[in-house]
Amino acid sequence: MRLYPEKLAHHLQAGLAPCYFIYGDEPLLKLEALDMLRQCARNNGFDDHLRFDAPNLEWDDIFSASQSLSLFSQRQIIELALPEKLDKNSAQRLGELLKQCHPDLLLLITGPKLNQQQQKSAWFSAISQAGPVILVNTPEGSHWLRWLQQRIKQHGLQIDNDGVQWLSLAFEGNLLALNGELEKLALQQLPSPLSLALLQEQVQPHHQFNPFQLFDPLLEGKVKRATRILLQLRAEGIEAGMLCHLFARELTPLIHMQLGLTAGQSFSKLAAELHIWSSRQGLVQSALQRLPLAKLQQLQAMLGAADVAVANFEEDEAWRWLYSLCVGFLDGKKMGINP
Image (cartoon, rainbow, N blue to C red; front, side, top):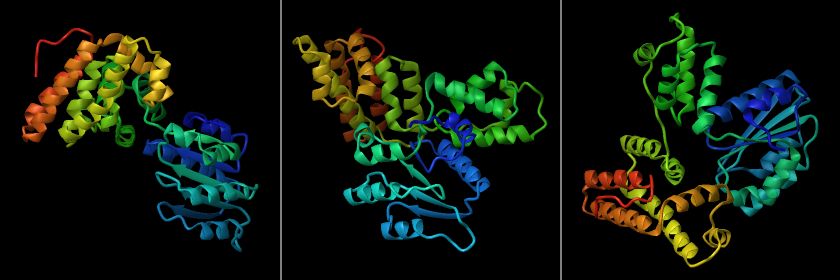
């Protein structure tokens, strides 16, 4: 059963399930979900609490803990933090542990962001049958703005529209820092609604992006957002060479697919051959409809120029080419610059 983080409080009104799996890449949402579950468990008499962390999960110790209770408690919480990849032995032992769930044992399992293959695994299926699974990814696009507005309201604040937009740009990708700033604002006696000027006086921006967040906006043609992410990645110290490698991983399949479509092959067959996840196929189709082969080949040549600049230690030149490359995803018109 899949459960969204914002629905967890309502779910808990009906009581605790024997097992919860919280996974994803958003630390604030993961921490808040865990805290809510721990508090609910304590309110229901789960006083004994043990935690086991990756990468060194000692399964014999975990099983021993799950089969014994302290002298002072009849109900027990066991927390497991799973590693990035679960080996065969761990997957098997986890499946065995899930079969031991009972009303006096609560399993709180956390994990990283999972790919599609991991979500189709037997161990993930076993966890899903044992209790709710809660995906905690960083909200993006309209979901991010909606989350921000809800969090502002939750802290009892009122902020004008310009202020909300500024916060959405100043803290995109960094929910922990944003929540901390909202908590501080809520403790101060400031005029309401908070204006943009006042926020800029009181709050220090904390953007945070990872390189993989750059490519979905590019595939959608959202160049303004993509270039903003690119500039922030540079400010955060990401190397141009790393981005060149990631751009090649995105561009090469696009060119292969455009060649295949031109030759009469179906999109679904090409997507399967190139192992493009179903969740991204809509984005890829959008890009292919907008970017003809000639434009994609020009973008590839620009990437080659960025690669040469990296090899020659011309960092500024490499970043200029990467910026132009992002702009090139806007439409199918050939650009007036040549590598």
